[in-house]
Image 1 (cartoon, rainbow, N blue to C red):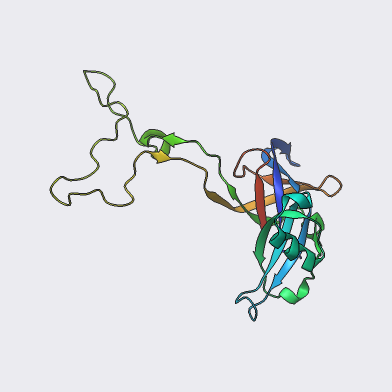
Image 2: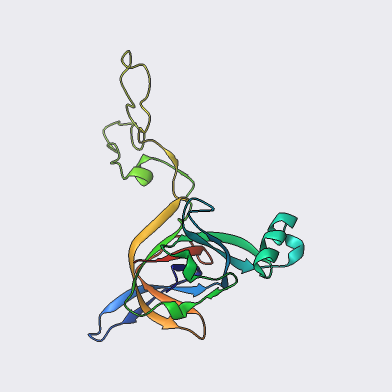
Length: 207
């Protein structure tokens, strides 16, 4: 069984189960993934397989990456990722990973980059309450006090304030596979997943 696969987000839709319940799902399409390196505890300190995906032209890659791919006998891939495995001897270089390793009803972990929402204030970023809007109040969406004056004479690290919202690594721990189309390389995963359309997601098999 494959430890995971890289997929590209298509978008969201909904399906109906046997009882007629409307279930929101996210459609993803599997990338062409091949094993480019096998790492063991003896040589690298841990057991894992490196997977190459995102085929491109050789002219767009650097010589070190082309040499790395040539050792594995692979075509030109621009992206790489790793999956932890317990027994790396079960895998071979240039071995393809497809959707045949997954089944309907299986629970997987999905990791990806969340949607970036820019620089936002406390109300949107931390769900803070606003100030009064009437009676001469001028504190509508201001942050308010951020700490004492003389002591400690500084703002403690981690203070919830305005700043960058989103665009960070996000993991959905339990997502169920509800539909598989091997011909179109499409998976339907229950619920929403991180990122916008065309975002690359890492689907990890839960052992």
